[in-house]
Length: 444
Image 1 (cartoon, helix red, strand yellow):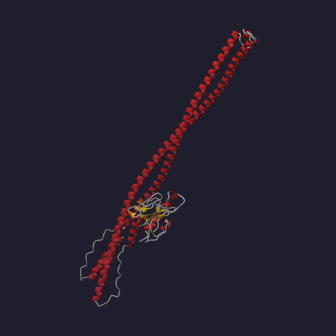
Image 2 (image 1 turned 60 degrees about the vertical axis):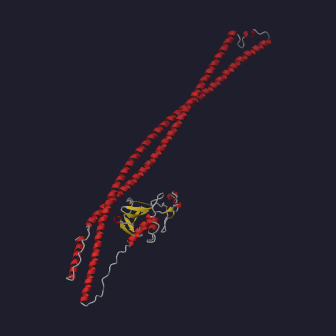
Image 3 (image 1 turned 180 degrees about the vertical axis):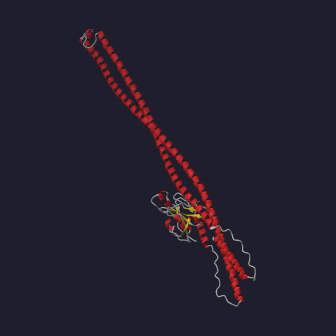
């Protein structure tokens, strides 16, 4: 027999008993019809579907996290390849400039060498002409005819000195020009060797630029492919999250129907017990007897639990936009962050006034529940309930290999958190990747 059938039978029995008690004394008021009461199978099936969707969201979230990590790595690789391509472009331009300069130097050295050779050839032709003329005129050194026209020994000596000076000067000039031509030829050879080296470097730089461009293109293609895969996973996760939200809404709706039915059932039971007590009291008075014990009264719900939860949510929501500060926050409000010697310090958290994730929870429940400023201890600070049963005000925890983050559930698939350094207190959708399977309920 299902719970619904048992409850219906119990109501029928109570109604018949009351009818017997009141007899002809009066007609009982009509019993209002009960609200819908979904079966246990309907609720469990709906919950199983929601759990399955949550599992899919978790898997897709993990895949998306891996895809985003891969995309980040590929983006970094693209940036590296772009820088390497820039370097190759600079190296290529430098090599081209050096090759152009080496070509200009080689051309200049070649022209100097050719000009020196031309000067030497002209000087040699002049010397040959002088020597030939001297022989034709009999004026070479040692030739008698060169001195025959002398009018005196002094004139003969002057002629000898003149011939010696002319021939010696030309020979000396020719030797100096030949030495200069040798130096220019050496310079020309060195310039041509430098040109060859520069051209080799230019060719190598051009090949390096082509390789860098190819590597950059391949990296960009890989990054674009991964971006498409990441977008596909994001779309799939969004779709499944929407299905999860709908499934959770269905579970909440069925559970709400069940709760309304149970409330109606409890109210009817109280009303029936009160009527039975009144009937017994009337019967006792009619027989002169006394009732030695009155029926116990039921305390009305005060709503204290709901009030504490809503106050905690209101306090947390009042801090939206407050900066994240590692180690910040207490029951009185935001405080200055502390140093961690790493990431938080790089964001300057120790100079900020704000909250970290557990500090925000300490403030939210401040004055109602005393919480330690550590998410791992907060996880065990209340009653743990399955995620399928989480409700407003419950704390959600992340880090299956070690708790590292805590948030507060707001309902409708949303939560409030102080996320991480560089961010602010915000409201966001519940993330199911790396979430612990139980929420912590601090009150109720």
